[in-house]
Amino acid sequence: MATEKPLLENLSLNQITTEYWSLKEAVDGCVKADIPWISLWRHKIDEIGLSESKKIITDSGLKLSSLCRGGMFPAVTAEQRQKSLDDNRRAVEEAAELGTDVLVLVCGSAPDRDIHTSRKWVEEGIEQLVPFAESYGVKLGIEPLHPMYAADRSVVVSLGQANKMAEKYNANQVGVVVDVFHVWWDPDLYNQIERAKGRILGFHVSDWSVPITDTFKARHMMGDGVIEIRRIRQAVEQAGYHGPIEVEIMNQALWDTPGDEVLSLIKERFVEHV
Amino acid sequence: MATEKPLLENLSLNQITTEYWSLKEAVDGCVKADIPWISLWRHKIDEIGLSESKKIITDSGLKLSSLCRGGMFPAVTAEQRQKSLDDNRRAVEEAAELGTDVLVLVCGSAPDRDIHTSRKWVEEGIEQLVPFAESYGVKLGIEPLHPMYAADRSVVVSLGQANKMAEKYNANQVGVVVDVFHVWWDPDLYNQIERAKGRILGFHVSDWSVPITDTFKARHMMGDGVIEIRRIRQAVEQAGYHGPIEVEIMNQALWDTPGDEVLSLIKERFVEHV
Image (cartoon, rainbow over all chains, first blue to last red; front, top):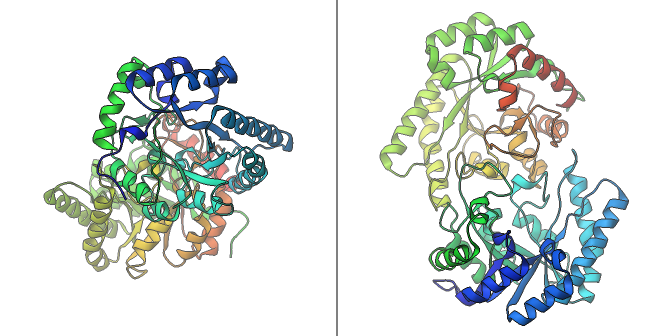
């Protein structure tokens, strides 16, 4: 069920890896580098508008692996939470319009001293979003983030927690996204990957290296850290996921490198380490 | 079983909170501030030797809540692992000599791409250390560290994992240390605190605040972050722990503050937030 090497036909550029490229530059870069998939971020779509973004993608022949991102549900006032829900509905519409059925959810954080209430708000947000997303044929992919982001990006911090949340819904409504950077430390990882069978909506790769001086930009190129990426990729395949594999790396040095060089390095490291 | 406010008679200064103080200065500071407990770090003991350290503690009348730290078991060669074990035995002897029955274990990290083997080395190290420690009347307190330290400080990353490891031994041999900074994010935290009943050997407090620019010195004074410290402290009491509560904060700004001011602030925040 799992291949020794990953298939280059599954390689996807998550656009944040080339943060200083416009959407057009990222798409052109992928076409030139023979990378068949791309994942778009909404702040890049906003720069040129949805219809122009769609035209660029369609003309390029690239396939869209996901849209990043919905989520960010917790907020102290009901009004703010409603705003967040409205924004999530727009994200669903954008995903559908652009031609992907996966909206990645970065669920949001604990803004004060009550992580439990934040978790409840996340559950409520997803529950409210599901019927809307389903009507557009868009699945919600809950991405557990590394616990170091619990206070600023996501109160969903492990694959076990994400699985439990997803299992309340049908597999065509809600699933999980497995990102090696976020889950590699988890003693229960392989059990939880198996448990996620049929619900894995995406697989993201990068690497973990110390020291960390900026938690957001802490990711490294595959092979430059300690994560057993290949083992995790094979487990995800054993659990039935054979879709696109996104390379998602927030890293200042990489952002400062010419995009074409980054894509070339990605392909090399993908074959060697994923 | 749990008190509304914490008892000041349980307050302990973990010495790293006043890293720029010598052992003598830290002890004198606690006496002056009426803080009844202290936890010593071995690098501070090394500065003046064990017998001088013991004399200072004994003369002061302070009680020793724990010795920091043993552990750091994983290493690539058998020779390095043997060296680590030897050092852990010295740590046990020091704990016994100084008059505490708790040696805190920071278990060590995954130096390469195989966290499973590192975890095996930790298990082996503890197994080898237990009979020696027992013969000195010293208990090993496995302290799960936050998952952001999995590559540089500890492959034991959750209380569940620590409980499982400790349960292989008698409660007078191996237990766990609960540090709010390391465990606050865990969706299974309160279950695991309950499970740890009878095995909790220490309780540490600080706070979590973002952004983090240095993972080691990332801790904040209680009340300056998002952790539900009081709720966790009460859960730990419900699980039968009524021992010393160590304030353990690695924080550059705090280190740069005069120690007496730090101790004064600790007492204030302890009553208010712990």
